[in-house]
Amino acid sequence: MFASRWIDRWEPEDPEFWDGTGRRVARRNLVFSILTEHVGFSVWTLFAVMVLFMDESYGLTPGDKFLMVAVASAVGSVIRVPYTFGPARFGGRNWTIFSALVLLVPTAMLAMVMHPGTSLGTFLLVAAVAGLGGGNFASSMANINAFYPEGRKGLALGLNAGGGNLGVAAVQLVGLLVIGATGLARPELVLYLYLPLIVVVTVCAALFMDNLTTARNDTRALGEILREPQTWVMSFLYTGTFGSFIGYSFAFGLVLQSQFGQTPLQAAALTFLGPLLGGLSRPAGGWLSDRMGGARVTLYVFAGLAAGTILVIHASQVRSLPLFLVGFISMFVLTGIGNGSTYKMIPAIFRSKADAAIRAGADTGLELLKARRLSGALIGWAGAVGALGGLFINLAFRSSFQNTGSGVSAFVAFLVFYGGCGVVTYAAYLRKVPSASGVRQLAYAGV
Image (cartoon, rainbow, N blue to C red; front, side, top):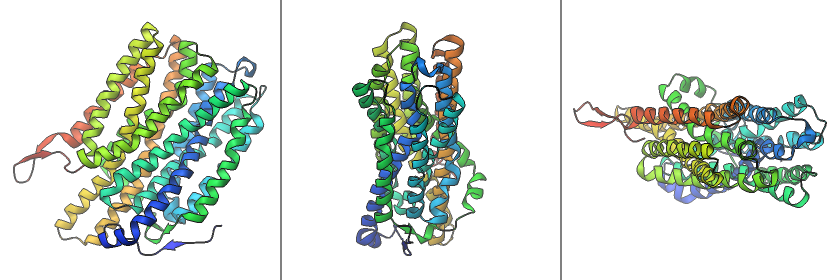
């Protein structure tokens, strides 16, 4: 199963190569990358479902539950950094096999301890191990980024990430079906479904995916991007989009229970809608960015998130669940679009730099290869830093509910943050500045 299968020649920017061979191979790798990343997201967010089963017999407070999902979110964020370089070091196919197979560990652990009487410390340990599922996103995106030409990255990365993000909605829908069928007595049924599914996607990755020789042994890319100012700008913006998506995905059910008194079944019937629509909207963000520019789409997203947050704050104050759902679910949709647009911006930034170097006389092949290397590294790094937004969101909710009994103060903080993200997007990429010829142009053209 782990036999090496490397592709030595990969030139996606060559139209003849792409039309003759590249498109078919890239599409096949994309399909099975989506499947494994989908399951990875499901495992990463298992605790968002498991907390719905934890009634009074577990002896856990709402703060304890927010802490558990925060731990899973945090580990899933940090682990993305080394996972980013897994495809480059071991090959995209080989790393996908490993990263899928290891998901058996937290799933089996949780199946063994998911019952009343288990200590908070044990649940926190299992939540940390479940965070491994969050790493799959970074390695998958870095791998698929290398397969596609610049003009097709937006949609490809959007489909890859969107299909993965749908794993959040899928596991929550499974949780809903189990609660609806058995009540709160059989949470392990959710886990028993995912154990064989993990095996299936691992075998599929082994049979149908490929490794790219051109992506091997790239250990310097991280050091290079950490010296690049655009890395920190994009990491900040991705915290606002993906950090919001994953943070809200973890917290949605708990917020409905804590703020609106929803039962586990009522909460489960609603929580999958947000991640579902957020996952489905992510490819639209990439598609729109291919046509309008990622920076412009991202600016509109942050304006929409600010408006949605204002609506959610008002709904919370007047205790209107329908209004709250409209605002909160619209924010999920916007985060999905923003996830696609920000990830489209990353390769566009380095392609813009490569084009400038080529016009100055640099070697075309070397500059394009460098652009793919650095954009792949930044995709992983921004994914890691951005996912930390999920940690901050759940810690903010935990503090807000403990201190005020409501999530309003947390939403006010999110509103201020979205405003800052919008200002940074405009200043870094859309502000008009004089060019060398004296004509005013975008601060960072082509992004």
